[in-house]
Amino acid sequence: MTLRIGIIGCGGIGQEHARRLHFKLAGAQVVAINDINLAAATQFSEMSGIQARVLDSDQAVIDAPDVDALVVASWGPAHEEQVLACIKAGKPVFCEKPLAVTAEGARRIVDAEVQAGKKLVQVGFMRRYDAGYRALKATLDAGTVGDALLVHAAHRNPAVPEMYVGDMSITDTFIHEIDVFRWLLNDDYVSVQVIEGRKTRNAHAGLHDPITVLLETRQGIRIDTEIYVACRFGYDIQCHVVGETGVASLPEPMSVPLRSNARQGSGILMDWKLRFIDSYDVELQDWIEATVRGEVNGPDAWDGYVASVTAEACIEARRTKQILPIALPERPAFYARQG
Ligand code: NAI
Ligand code: ISE
Image (cartoon, rainbow, N blue to C red; front, side, top):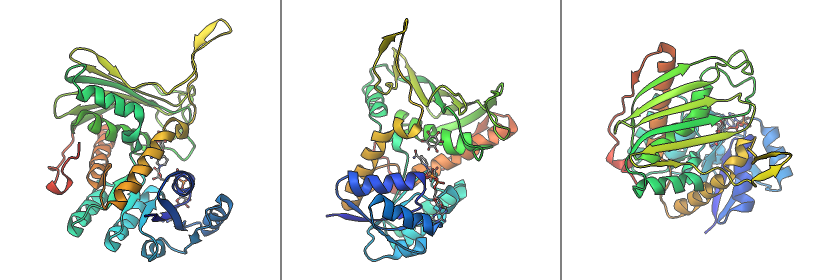
């Protein structure tokens, strides 16, 4: 069966996902699209060669009888309403992160899905599909370094645009670590502290950069993450898990080791799109296949909600300069862990 897909939001990642689903992956076809910028959606539909119908509202795409499932890739503040509309229509939806811009909004999605009685929502936390993170998780789950005790991590971007301000280091960037560490460690968070140190002269006026986030998990694992989005030298994702008998690290992306000009070394990627390009493919292929089976196999609405609660706690901890508890309700049986 070919899954017929509607895309809502045809900006940067919406276009990439549309191309990937339509031309690269198996079992899917993009049949309808919408963007609040209709002219841009029309241009994309034609220029990309997808030639999908451009509908004049998000609701029209959701309601289209030939659309089996939706991809929401609009900007964050629109996600809640669009995902709720998909649940109301009983259609599976892949929503890019964040699920909603507030924890309350994400909770409304969880409640609506539970009420509907069927899992329909997957959130775009693609790092769970990255081969490196999967190998690291397999190593930890096998007990190779004993129980995890500490995690040292970094999320570094060479630069961010002027519109990236305030708490976006948390809501736009660190949100990926928030999700992937819970999954990696089979754990949840209980407290957070955020430390602002010396600011780089390369960060623009509206942004304090870098920051350090310290998370504590239920099992007592301590995670420190540097978020440094004006680091200039590359897009560099680090994760080192210290266990009782060793250290397990996230593999570096493949790069040719060089000895040249009296130096040895290897390249560092500059663009986040390239760093996780394979994981987007694996993520969406898995979503297509699970959707056809009538299942949600990836990060679900509960994961999206937990990420929002944690991000809000990080923001408050940063504002108050305090160590704050992270209060999570019990996971409903509806969202039983899939491992
Ligand atoms: P973008 O700004 O390039 O594109 C967003 C598009 O949504 C624009 O074309 C805009 O006109 C459209 N839009 C806004 N409101 C809309 C509405 N109500 N209905 C229909 N269209 C609407 O942003 P980008 O980078 O593509 O990000 C989109 C989402 O994807 C964001 O939530 C972002 O956080 C997430 N994202 C996820 C990534 C990942 O690694 N998983 C990477 C990049 C973005
Ligand atoms: C961006 O929005 C993403 O989602 C990327 O995956 C992330 O690594 C980057 O730092 C964000 O700005």
